[in-house]
Amino acid sequence: MLSPAGFVTSYAQIGAKKCTNSAVRLFLAAVLAGFFIAAGAVAASTASCGLDNASVARVVSGLLFPFGLIMVILTGAELFTGNCLIVVSLLEGAASWTGMVRNLILVYLGNFTGAAALAGAMACSGALSSGALAAYTIRAAAGKCALPFGQAVVLGILCNILVCAGAMCSLCGQTVTGRAVGAFVPVCFFIIGGFEHCVANMYYIPAGILATGLPGGGELAQAAGADLSALGLAGLLRNLIPVTIGNLIGGCGFGALIWTVHRTAEG
Image (cartoon, rainbow, N blue to C red; front, side):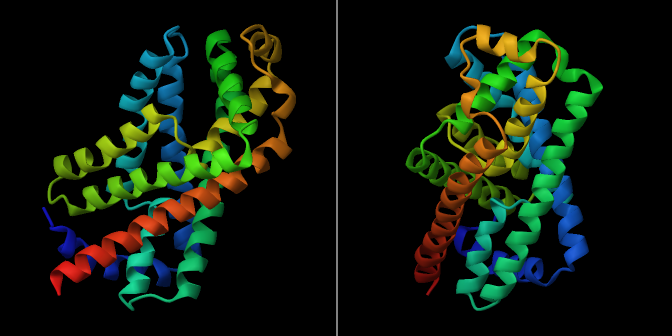
């Protein structure tokens, strides 16, 4: 595997290329990444919705969700949270602020498109009609919408430190197995820890909103103790804004720390 110093040198060029890719290429690759992350959320929700023990449900989710990031990395898709590592390229002088901001905006929009599209497909196909899954999805979405701003920022910071650590460990791997394991472990930790990932929430919250419109969905969630007062488009924004801010702080901060430590060590 690459050493951390080797990663800094390698990623400087990877990030620079991300900043110069065409807008169409970035957006489409980001749609794919949003879909994969949402697919990990679907698998995690479906497997854990019937479990009564909250700790066991989190562990099951943690074991399944990371496969979304693994697919993102192995297919070369573009993920907003992982692309916060472009700060390494910026600090190395290989990329510009405008290129980084352009990449993050285009990728964020593409991720939202892919994740929300899968939420719509799940609702339209009837896959969310299962009582347990509908109630679980609505309850999770409502809880995310009700998070206080400061708490959502902190949970977003913690999340993206781990996601970027997973992206780094994966990119250091020289085999498919190594890259998969590198991505798996940190992302598993963030799910079990209950941290907040903006792209995952681009699936969870729209899916929860759509599930309330399905026959009996809202009643099931209320019976399970979910407070639906915060769930809606306004709630989506109240969650995504602070979580995105936190993800940016955590991801860019992690990238800057890795660059500082390992460029210094290399020199």
